[in-house]
Image (tube, rainbow, N blue to C red; front, side, top):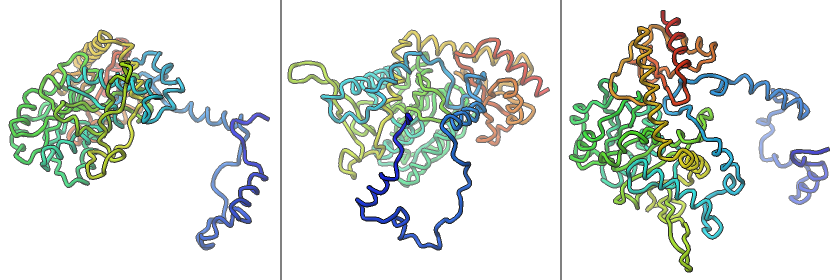
Length: 448
Protein backbone atom coordinates (compact mmCIF):
# COMPACT_ATOMS: atom_id res chain seq x y z
CA UNK A 1 0.00 0.00 0.00
CA UNK A 2 1.28 3.49 -0.90
CA UNK A 3 1.39 5.92 2.02
CA UNK A 4 1.78 9.69 1.88
CA UNK A 5 4.10 9.30 4.84
CA UNK A 6 5.71 6.28 6.48
CA UNK A 7 3.73 5.10 9.51
CA UNK A 8 5.49 3.92 12.64
CA UNK A 9 5.49 0.15 13.12
CA UNK A 10 5.37 -1.66 16.43
CA UNK A 11 8.96 -2.76 15.86
CA UNK A 12 9.94 0.90 15.38
CA UNK A 13 8.42 1.71 18.79
CA UNK A 14 10.26 -1.19 20.45
CA UNK A 15 13.58 -0.15 18.88
CA UNK A 16 13.23 3.46 20.03
CA UNK A 17 12.21 2.48 23.57
CA UNK A 18 15.17 0.10 23.76
CA UNK A 19 17.53 2.83 22.61
CA UNK A 20 16.47 5.20 25.41
CA UNK A 21 16.14 2.44 28.00
CA UNK A 22 12.40 2.58 28.58
CA UNK A 23 10.09 -0.40 28.94
CA UNK A 24 6.97 1.28 27.54
CA UNK A 25 5.55 4.54 26.27
CA UNK A 26 3.72 5.00 29.60
CA UNK A 27 7.07 5.02 31.37
CA UNK A 28 7.89 8.25 29.54
CA UNK A 29 5.12 9.94 31.54
CA UNK A 30 6.06 8.48 34.93
CA UNK A 31 6.90 11.93 36.33
CA UNK A 32 3.27 13.02 35.90
CA UNK A 33 1.18 12.05 38.97
CA UNK A 34 -1.54 9.49 38.35
CA UNK A 35 -4.09 11.83 39.91
CA UNK A 36 -3.78 14.37 37.11
CA UNK A 37 -3.51 12.00 34.16
CA UNK A 38 -6.43 11.83 31.76
CA UNK A 39 -7.94 8.34 31.84
CA UNK A 40 -11.00 8.74 29.62
CA UNK A 41 -11.54 8.80 25.87
CA UNK A 42 -10.99 11.93 23.83
CA UNK A 43 -14.11 13.51 22.39
CA UNK A 44 -13.06 13.01 18.78
CA UNK A 45 -14.54 11.01 15.98
CA UNK A 46 -13.31 7.48 15.26
CA UNK A 47 -10.51 7.26 12.70
CA UNK A 48 -11.53 7.09 9.05
CA UNK A 49 -9.81 5.88 5.93
CA UNK A 50 -7.83 8.47 4.00
CA UNK A 51 -10.38 8.73 1.19
CA UNK A 52 -13.32 9.06 3.61
CA UNK A 53 -11.47 11.68 5.65
CA UNK A 54 -10.57 13.75 2.58
CA UNK A 55 -14.19 13.65 1.43
CA UNK A 56 -15.43 14.91 4.81
CA UNK A 57 -12.83 17.70 4.95
CA UNK A 58 -13.70 18.84 1.42
CA UNK A 59 -17.37 19.00 2.38
CA UNK A 60 -16.50 21.14 5.37
CA UNK A 61 -14.25 23.40 3.30
CA UNK A 62 -17.05 23.88 0.76
CA UNK A 63 -19.08 25.62 3.45
CA UNK A 64 -16.60 28.51 3.56
CA UNK A 65 -17.55 31.73 1.83
CA UNK A 66 -14.73 33.21 -0.24
CA UNK A 67 -14.01 35.85 -2.83
CA UNK A 68 -13.99 33.31 -5.65
CA UNK A 69 -17.63 32.37 -5.16
CA UNK A 70 -18.81 35.76 -3.86
CA UNK A 71 -18.46 39.39 -4.90
CA UNK A 72 -16.45 41.16 -2.20
CA UNK A 73 -16.81 44.76 -1.04
CA UNK A 74 -14.88 44.07 2.14
CA UNK A 75 -11.60 45.93 2.60
CA UNK A 76 -10.53 47.57 5.87
CA UNK A 77 -6.85 46.87 5.27
CA UNK A 78 -6.97 43.65 3.23
CA UNK A 79 -8.21 43.80 -0.34
CA UNK A 80 -9.43 41.65 -3.21
CA UNK A 81 -7.08 42.74 -6.01
CA UNK A 82 -5.99 41.31 -9.33
CA UNK A 83 -3.10 38.86 -8.96
CA UNK A 84 -1.05 38.09 -12.09
CA UNK A 85 -1.09 34.33 -12.67
CA UNK A 86 2.71 34.24 -12.88
CA UNK A 87 2.95 35.02 -9.14
CA UNK A 88 1.92 31.54 -7.99
CA UNK A 89 4.12 29.93 -10.63
CA UNK A 90 7.28 31.69 -9.44
CA UNK A 91 6.72 31.34 -5.69
CA UNK A 92 5.95 27.63 -6.14
CA UNK A 93 9.48 26.94 -7.31
CA UNK A 94 11.30 24.91 -4.65
CA UNK A 95 14.36 27.16 -4.57
CA UNK A 96 12.12 29.99 -3.36
CA UNK A 97 9.46 28.40 -1.18
CA UNK A 98 12.00 26.41 0.82
CA UNK A 99 14.47 29.27 1.21
CA UNK A 100 15.25 30.78 4.59
CA UNK A 101 17.64 33.52 5.68
CA UNK A 102 20.31 33.75 2.93
CA UNK A 103 23.33 33.66 5.24
CA UNK A 104 25.56 32.12 2.58
CA UNK A 105 25.56 34.47 -0.40
CA UNK A 106 27.53 32.08 -2.60
CA UNK A 107 24.51 29.75 -2.72
CA UNK A 108 21.72 32.31 -2.19
CA UNK A 109 22.11 34.74 -5.07
CA UNK A 110 18.59 34.16 -6.42
CA UNK A 111 16.94 34.80 -3.06
CA UNK A 112 19.16 37.78 -2.33
CA UNK A 113 18.46 39.35 -5.71
CA UNK A 114 14.72 38.86 -5.23
CA UNK A 115 14.89 40.66 -1.89
CA UNK A 116 17.04 43.42 -3.41
CA UNK A 117 14.47 43.96 -6.15
CA UNK A 118 11.68 44.14 -3.54
CA UNK A 119 13.62 46.77 -1.59
CA UNK A 120 14.27 48.77 -4.75
CA UNK A 121 10.64 48.81 -5.92
CA UNK A 122 9.33 49.72 -2.45
CA UNK A 123 11.84 52.56 -2.16
CA UNK A 124 10.78 53.86 -5.58
CA UNK A 125 7.06 53.65 -4.80
CA UNK A 126 7.37 55.39 -1.44
CA UNK A 127 9.87 58.03 -2.53
CA UNK A 128 12.20 57.01 0.30
CA UNK A 129 15.96 56.45 0.15
CA UNK A 130 15.87 52.76 1.06
CA UNK A 131 13.67 49.89 2.22
CA UNK A 132 14.40 46.77 4.24
CA UNK A 133 13.89 43.17 3.19
CA UNK A 134 10.28 43.12 4.55
CA UNK A 135 8.53 42.64 7.87
CA UNK A 136 5.69 40.52 9.23
CA UNK A 137 2.82 42.84 8.21
CA UNK A 138 1.68 46.44 8.13
CA UNK A 139 0.85 46.57 11.84
CA UNK A 140 4.23 45.41 13.10
CA UNK A 141 5.95 47.67 10.56
CA UNK A 142 4.16 50.70 11.98
CA UNK A 143 4.93 49.69 15.56
CA UNK A 144 8.61 49.17 14.72
CA UNK A 145 8.65 52.64 13.15
CA UNK A 146 7.32 54.09 16.39
CA UNK A 147 10.00 52.31 18.42
CA UNK A 148 12.70 53.54 16.04
CA UNK A 149 11.43 57.11 16.40
CA UNK A 150 11.42 56.91 20.20
CA UNK A 151 14.95 55.51 20.27
CA UNK A 152 16.28 57.99 17.72
CA UNK A 153 14.78 61.11 19.31
CA UNK A 154 15.07 59.83 22.90
CA UNK A 155 11.50 60.95 23.46
CA UNK A 156 8.64 59.05 25.02
CA UNK A 157 5.43 60.06 23.25
CA UNK A 158 3.82 58.98 19.99
CA UNK A 159 0.92 60.90 18.45
CA UNK A 160 -1.22 58.41 16.55
CA UNK A 161 -4.11 59.53 14.36
CA UNK A 162 -7.45 57.85 15.03
CA UNK A 163 -7.82 57.51 11.26
CA UNK A 164 -5.12 54.80 11.28
CA UNK A 165 -6.31 51.19 11.08
CA UNK A 166 -7.58 50.29 14.60
CA UNK A 167 -5.64 47.02 14.65
CA UNK A 168 -2.44 48.83 13.69
CA UNK A 169 -3.01 51.24 16.58
CA UNK A 170 -3.44 48.29 18.93
CA UNK A 171 -0.12 46.82 17.81
CA UNK A 172 1.60 50.18 18.35
CA UNK A 173 0.11 50.40 21.85
CA UNK A 174 1.32 46.87 22.67
CA UNK A 175 4.87 47.65 21.57
CA UNK A 176 4.84 51.02 23.36
CA UNK A 177 3.68 49.51 26.66
CA UNK A 178 6.79 47.37 26.92
CA UNK A 179 9.00 50.40 26.24
CA UNK A 180 7.09 52.74 28.61
CA UNK A 181 6.20 54.97 25.69
CA UNK A 182 3.03 57.07 25.88
CA UNK A 183 0.62 56.72 22.96
CA UNK A 184 -1.72 59.67 22.45
CA UNK A 185 -4.63 59.51 20.00
CA UNK A 186 -5.18 62.43 17.66
CA UNK A 187 -8.92 62.89 16.90
CA UNK A 188 -10.33 63.05 13.39
CA UNK A 189 -12.51 65.68 11.77
CA UNK A 190 -14.48 65.02 8.58
CA UNK A 191 -12.73 61.69 8.17
CA UNK A 192 -9.13 62.94 8.38
CA UNK A 193 -6.67 63.86 11.12
CA UNK A 194 -7.74 67.02 12.96
CA UNK A 195 -4.76 69.31 12.36
CA UNK A 196 -5.78 71.84 15.01
CA UNK A 197 -6.05 69.10 17.65
CA UNK A 198 -2.64 67.82 16.54
CA UNK A 199 -1.09 71.24 17.08
CA UNK A 200 -2.43 71.28 20.63
CA UNK A 201 -1.12 67.81 21.47
CA UNK A 202 2.40 67.97 20.06
CA UNK A 203 5.23 69.01 22.37
CA UNK A 204 8.95 68.64 22.93
CA UNK A 205 8.50 65.05 24.18
CA UNK A 206 6.86 63.88 20.94
CA UNK A 207 8.98 61.30 19.17
CA UNK A 208 6.76 61.04 16.09
CA UNK A 209 3.42 61.79 14.49
CA UNK A 210 1.78 58.80 12.78
CA UNK A 211 -0.85 58.95 10.04
CA UNK A 212 -2.21 56.63 7.34
CA UNK A 213 -2.31 57.41 3.61
CA UNK A 214 -4.99 56.80 2.39
CA UNK A 215 -6.41 56.44 5.88
CA UNK A 216 -8.71 53.76 7.28
CA UNK A 217 -11.77 55.55 5.89
CA UNK A 218 -10.23 55.81 2.42
CA UNK A 219 -9.62 59.55 2.80
CA UNK A 220 -6.43 61.29 1.65
CA UNK A 221 -4.55 62.98 4.49
CA UNK A 222 -2.71 66.33 4.06
CA UNK A 223 0.76 64.88 4.56
CA UNK A 224 2.65 68.08 3.86
CA UNK A 225 0.87 70.03 6.60
CA UNK A 226 1.05 67.21 9.16
CA UNK A 227 4.71 66.56 8.39
CA UNK A 228 5.57 70.23 8.86
CA UNK A 229 3.91 70.20 12.30
CA UNK A 230 5.92 67.12 13.32
CA UNK A 231 9.20 68.56 12.11
CA UNK A 232 8.65 71.94 13.75
CA UNK A 233 8.56 70.07 17.07
CA UNK A 234 11.70 68.15 16.00
CA UNK A 235 9.79 64.89 15.89
CA UNK A 236 9.71 62.32 13.10
CA UNK A 237 6.88 61.97 10.61
CA UNK A 238 5.71 58.37 10.05
CA UNK A 239 3.28 57.38 7.29
CA UNK A 240 1.53 54.03 6.90
CA UNK A 241 0.80 53.92 3.17
CA UNK A 242 -1.05 51.62 0.79
CA UNK A 243 1.66 50.92 -1.84
CA UNK A 244 -0.87 50.45 -4.63
CA UNK A 245 -2.29 53.92 -4.00
CA UNK A 246 1.24 55.29 -4.36
CA UNK A 247 1.01 54.38 -8.04
CA UNK A 248 -1.06 57.53 -8.44
CA UNK A 249 -0.70 59.55 -5.22
CA UNK A 250 2.34 61.69 -4.39
CA UNK A 251 4.78 59.44 -2.48
CA UNK A 252 5.18 60.19 1.25
CA UNK A 253 8.92 60.65 0.75
CA UNK A 254 8.16 63.65 -1.47
CA UNK A 255 5.95 65.14 1.25
CA UNK A 256 8.35 65.02 4.16
CA UNK A 257 7.93 61.52 5.60
CA UNK A 258 10.89 60.23 7.59
CA UNK A 259 9.58 56.66 7.66
CA UNK A 260 7.02 55.05 5.36
CA UNK A 261 5.59 51.65 6.23
CA UNK A 262 2.70 49.50 5.11
CA UNK A 263 1.57 46.13 3.86
CA UNK A 264 2.37 44.70 0.42
CA UNK A 265 -0.74 42.46 0.46
CA UNK A 266 -2.18 44.54 -2.38
CA UNK A 267 0.48 43.13 -4.72
CA UNK A 268 -0.09 39.46 -5.48
CA UNK A 269 -0.91 38.27 -1.95
CA UNK A 270 -4.41 36.78 -1.35
CA UNK A 271 -6.61 37.70 1.61
CA UNK A 272 -6.05 34.24 3.15
CA UNK A 273 -8.45 34.86 6.04
CA UNK A 274 -6.03 37.12 7.87
CA UNK A 275 -2.54 36.26 6.75
CA UNK A 276 0.28 35.74 6.34
CA UNK A 277 1.07 39.08 4.73
CA UNK A 278 4.17 41.14 4.03
CA UNK A 279 5.03 44.40 5.74
CA UNK A 280 7.46 46.89 4.25
CA UNK A 281 9.64 49.49 5.97
CA UNK A 282 11.21 52.38 4.07
CA UNK A 283 13.13 55.33 5.42
CA UNK A 284 15.75 58.00 4.81
CA UNK A 285 19.48 57.37 4.62
CA UNK A 286 19.88 59.21 7.93
CA UNK A 287 18.01 56.42 9.74
CA UNK A 288 19.51 53.55 7.75
CA UNK A 289 21.50 52.02 10.61
CA UNK A 290 18.43 51.89 12.84
CA UNK A 291 16.12 50.10 10.43
CA UNK A 292 14.71 46.88 11.92
CA UNK A 293 15.31 43.58 10.17
CA UNK A 294 17.96 43.50 7.49
CA UNK A 295 19.06 45.06 4.21
CA UNK A 296 20.36 43.35 1.09
CA UNK A 297 23.00 45.24 -0.84
CA UNK A 298 24.56 44.98 -4.29
CA UNK A 299 28.31 44.48 -4.61
CA UNK A 300 30.90 42.80 -6.84
CA UNK A 301 33.01 39.70 -6.23
CA UNK A 302 36.79 39.47 -6.65
CA UNK A 303 36.34 39.04 -10.38
CA UNK A 304 34.18 42.15 -10.69
CA UNK A 305 30.91 40.27 -11.19
CA UNK A 306 27.74 41.69 -9.69
CA UNK A 307 26.50 39.96 -6.56
CA UNK A 308 24.15 40.43 -3.61
CA UNK A 309 24.84 40.12 0.12
CA UNK A 310 23.22 40.81 3.47
CA UNK A 311 24.53 44.16 4.68
CA UNK A 312 23.10 46.02 7.67
CA UNK A 313 21.39 43.77 10.19
CA UNK A 314 19.99 45.50 13.26
CA UNK A 315 18.12 42.60 14.84
CA UNK A 316 19.15 40.95 18.09
CA UNK A 317 19.93 37.59 16.45
CA UNK A 318 22.85 39.15 14.58
CA UNK A 319 24.36 41.70 16.97
CA UNK A 320 24.68 42.30 20.69
CA UNK A 321 21.21 42.38 22.22
CA UNK A 322 21.70 45.77 23.88
CA UNK A 323 22.63 47.22 20.47
CA UNK A 324 19.67 45.73 18.60
CA UNK A 325 16.85 47.95 17.38
CA UNK A 326 14.36 45.13 16.87
CA UNK A 327 13.70 41.59 18.00
CA UNK A 328 11.90 40.60 14.81
CA UNK A 329 13.96 37.60 13.79
CA UNK A 330 12.71 36.91 10.30
CA UNK A 331 11.33 38.49 7.18
CA UNK A 332 8.57 37.52 4.78
CA UNK A 333 10.87 36.50 1.94
CA UNK A 334 8.36 34.34 0.06
CA UNK A 335 5.57 36.91 0.22
CA UNK A 336 7.98 39.73 -0.58
CA UNK A 337 8.88 37.71 -3.66
CA UNK A 338 5.17 37.40 -4.53
CA UNK A 339 4.82 41.19 -4.25
CA UNK A 340 7.94 41.71 -6.37
CA UNK A 341 6.69 39.37 -9.09
CA UNK A 342 3.30 41.13 -9.11
CA UNK A 343 4.87 44.59 -9.32
CA UNK A 344 7.22 43.45 -12.08
CA UNK A 345 4.40 41.84 -14.06
CA UNK A 346 2.24 44.96 -13.77
CA UNK A 347 5.04 47.44 -14.41
CA UNK A 348 4.83 51.15 -13.66
CA UNK A 349 1.97 51.74 -16.09
CA UNK A 350 0.07 48.74 -14.80
CA UNK A 351 0.30 49.87 -11.18
CA UNK A 352 -0.82 53.36 -12.21
CA UNK A 353 -3.72 51.97 -14.23
CA UNK A 354 -4.98 49.75 -11.39
CA UNK A 355 -4.68 52.62 -8.92
CA UNK A 356 -6.64 54.84 -11.30
CA UNK A 357 -9.37 52.20 -11.66
CA UNK A 358 -9.70 52.02 -7.88
CA UNK A 359 -10.33 55.76 -7.77
CA UNK A 360 -12.73 55.82 -10.71
CA UNK A 361 -14.80 52.84 -9.56
CA UNK A 362 -14.96 54.09 -5.98
CA UNK A 363 -16.20 57.43 -7.28
CA UNK A 364 -18.85 55.63 -9.32
CA UNK A 365 -19.97 53.73 -6.21
CA UNK A 366 -20.12 56.96 -4.20
CA UNK A 367 -22.32 58.62 -6.82
CA UNK A 368 -24.53 55.53 -7.09
CA UNK A 369 -25.10 55.37 -3.33
CA UNK A 370 -25.96 59.06 -3.16
CA UNK A 371 -28.32 58.74 -6.12
CA UNK A 372 -30.07 55.92 -4.25
CA UNK A 373 -30.63 58.15 -1.22
CA UNK A 374 -27.72 57.02 0.95
CA UNK A 375 -25.46 59.44 2.78
CA UNK A 376 -21.74 59.12 2.07
CA UNK A 377 -20.44 60.82 5.18
CA UNK A 378 -16.95 61.99 4.19
CA UNK A 379 -16.64 64.13 1.09
CA UNK A 380 -12.89 64.62 0.73
CA UNK A 381 -10.56 62.99 -1.80
CA UNK A 382 -10.61 59.22 -1.34
CA UNK A 383 -9.11 55.98 -2.60
CA UNK A 384 -10.56 52.46 -2.58
CA UNK A 385 -13.11 53.05 0.17
CA UNK A 386 -16.08 55.16 1.19
CA UNK A 387 -18.15 55.34 4.36
CA UNK A 388 -21.90 54.87 3.82
CA UNK A 389 -24.51 55.55 6.49
CA UNK A 390 -27.26 52.94 6.87
CA UNK A 391 -30.60 53.06 8.66
CA UNK A 392 -30.32 49.55 10.07
CA UNK A 393 -27.56 47.44 11.70
CA UNK A 394 -24.69 46.68 9.35
CA UNK A 395 -24.14 43.13 10.61
CA UNK A 396 -27.74 42.21 9.87
CA UNK A 397 -27.46 43.76 6.42
CA UNK A 398 -24.31 41.75 5.70
CA UNK A 399 -26.12 38.54 6.65
CA UNK A 400 -28.72 39.39 4.02
CA UNK A 401 -26.09 40.27 1.41
CA UNK A 402 -24.22 37.00 1.77
CA UNK A 403 -27.42 35.20 0.82
CA UNK A 404 -27.16 37.02 -2.51
CA UNK A 405 -23.50 36.12 -3.02
CA UNK A 406 -22.18 39.48 -1.82
CA UNK A 407 -19.61 39.98 0.93
CA UNK A 408 -20.60 43.32 2.43
CA UNK A 409 -18.43 46.08 3.82
CA UNK A 410 -16.83 46.48 7.23
CA UNK A 411 -19.08 47.42 10.17
CA UNK A 412 -17.41 50.58 11.46
CA UNK A 413 -19.51 50.57 14.63
CA UNK A 414 -17.44 47.66 15.95
CA UNK A 415 -14.34 49.88 16.31
CA UNK A 416 -15.75 53.42 16.16
CA UNK A 417 -18.85 53.59 18.44
CA UNK A 418 -19.72 57.02 17.05
CA UNK A 419 -20.04 55.41 13.60
CA UNK A 420 -22.70 52.88 14.48
CA UNK A 421 -24.77 51.97 11.40
CA UNK A 422 -21.95 53.08 9.11
CA UNK A 423 -20.31 50.66 6.68
CA UNK A 424 -16.90 50.90 5.02
CA UNK A 425 -17.34 49.88 1.38
CA UNK A 426 -14.23 48.84 -0.57
CA UNK A 427 -14.27 49.01 -4.36
CA UNK A 428 -11.23 47.61 -6.17
CA UNK A 429 -10.39 47.30 -9.85
CA UNK A 430 -12.01 43.82 -9.88
CA UNK A 431 -15.49 45.15 -9.20
CA UNK A 432 -17.66 45.81 -12.23
CA UNK A 433 -20.32 48.45 -12.78
CA UNK A 434 -22.98 45.75 -12.67
CA UNK A 435 -21.71 44.40 -9.33
CA UNK A 436 -21.67 47.87 -7.80
CA UNK A 437 -25.21 48.53 -9.04
CA UNK A 438 -26.43 45.25 -7.52
CA UNK A 439 -24.81 46.12 -4.18
CA UNK A 440 -26.51 49.52 -4.10
CA UNK A 441 -29.84 47.94 -5.05
CA UNK A 442 -29.64 45.20 -2.38
CA UNK A 443 -28.53 47.63 0.33
CA UNK A 444 -31.30 50.01 -0.69
CA UNK A 445 -33.91 47.27 -0.36
CA UNK A 446 -32.62 46.28 3.08
CA UNK A 447 -32.49 49.87 4.37
CA UNK A 448 -35.88 50.87 2.95
